[in-house]
Structure formats: structure tokens, C-alpha cells
Length: 339
Image 1 (spheres, one colour):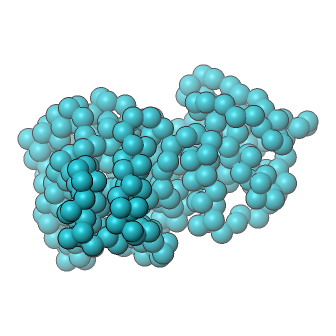
Image 2 (cartoon, rainbow, N blue to C red):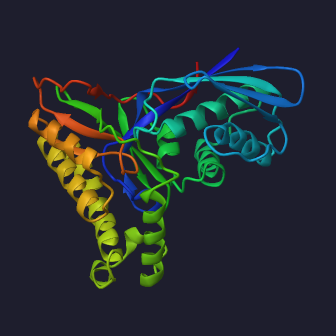
Image 3 (tube, helix red, strand yellow):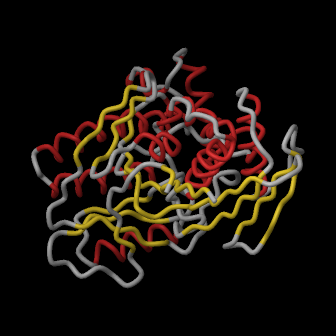
């Protein structure tokens, strides 16, 4: 029996910048998804989602497309096969402790764990991890139907313990950034509104950003001229302004971390959330109520994480602060790996 772990992730700052060629600062967390795999006879793959109490079975070669959670297993198998990897019939059992629909990227955790498990069962060597992240992103885009960027997959596969990862999505340059919080605490709290990438406003924001790029004549919105962007029609002007200002907040956060200025990190969280709410319009009432609750409890800063429109809120608490009930403390963990 082979066991593989894919971590969830928290994006410290840099939201909706990945698919716009900008910067982000995620870190892998200790929560995630475990996929156990064993080879079997035949030419089918059996997948059991233990947390959901559901199963799927499909052909090893050219699996049919379906909707819902079953698209993950079928997409991973199909994309690995398309990459020229000879897979074996097997049984996969999946379970996790990262909350579903939370904005902590349970989907990338599942994809990366499945990939490592399937490769190990097949006796195939692990490919370059950035290329593997691209493969997992294709699963998300082409099979699941969520037009995510590479942030979640790169965080799951390329982050290092005790560090965040500065990602430049225009060049895919990666830089580990030590994440030493001392006695401060990062925690997330669910808003009660389930976050779902493949539906709602996330894909609409991606369409708006593409339209802004076309109007400005740029490949990446993060490289747009701020004066030209201000002349765009609404809401494209606001979407572009968020991306440009959020990019600057990523490097400002890195500088604050290097100076051990956690209060500045908290202020940048607040600025990021205000931008996501007012310029990107990715918030919902449940998220706003959660931010207010965390701030009232003493958080130095709080902001929505993930694609928005629900999910969890990330907060930074000073030493000695009692976390509100239901908060989940998060610390940097290892990348996806065999166990």
C-alpha cells in the first residue's frame, strides 16, 4: 500500500494575482488530503472518497468526463496518461482533514496527492514539480471546470517547511521566504458560506481580467499602466487597480516579515481585504461578518483567502490573544510527499 499526502495551503497575501501574471505569497499547511493506493488486476481505476462515502470506477485509458468530485480522479489519470506515463490499474482511497469549500485549496491537495500516489504505484519517476503543478492545473481547468491559476498547485508541490513561497506568475520564479511569526498566530475561521471555484463569481472575475488585458493591450494585467487602467470602463478599472495594488502588498509583506514587523503585516491584510471587497467585489455578507468578529477579538489584520465568495478568513493575532471559538491555527508545513 502506498500513501501520499497533499497539503492544503494558505495564501498569506496576493489574491487574484496568479492568473494575472502577478505575485503571491502562499504557504503549505499541515492539513491536507491523504491518498492510499494499491495496484490491482484489470484496466480500471477505483476511487473511494471516504469523507463523502462515495465511489467511482472508470477506464484507465481515456476515462469519460463527469461532473463533481469524480472529475478529479478521472482528470488526473487522463492528464498523466497524456503526458506519456504508463499507469497501472489501481484502487485509490482518499481522506482529508482540510475543510472542503473553505478556500484552503482542498482541491489542489487532492490532485497532488493523487498524482504522487498514481506515479508511485506505476513505478514511474516523479517529474519536475513545476510541470506537475501545470498538469494538476489542467485537471482543475479542463476537467473540474474551475479556471484557477497555478497558485494552489505550486504551493502544494513547491513550498518548503517553515517558509512561504514568493511566486512571480509571469516568469514562475520561486523564492522561499522564512515565515517566523514568533509568538504571533495565524488562524482561519470559516465564514459559513461555502466557497466553490467552478461556479459563481470566480470565473466571471477571470473573464473581466481577460477583457481588461485586451482593452489595455497587455499580456498580464499585473503589468498594466496604472494611469491607462484608471481610464477603463467600470468594473474593469477596479479589477485592474486591485491587481496592481495587491502586487505591491506582496513585496511590502515580505519586507515587513524580514523586519519582524508583524503589525505591518496585519495592516497589509486589512488593506488586502478592503481591496478584495471594494475593488474586486469578491466578498459576501458572511465573510464581512467573520472579518468583523475576528477584528473585534483582537486580530491585527484579517482578510478573505482563496477565490472569495465565501470560504475562510485569515487573521493574524498578537501574542496572548485568545482565539475566537472555531478558529483553526495554521502553520507552514511540508509540500506534497509520499508517506
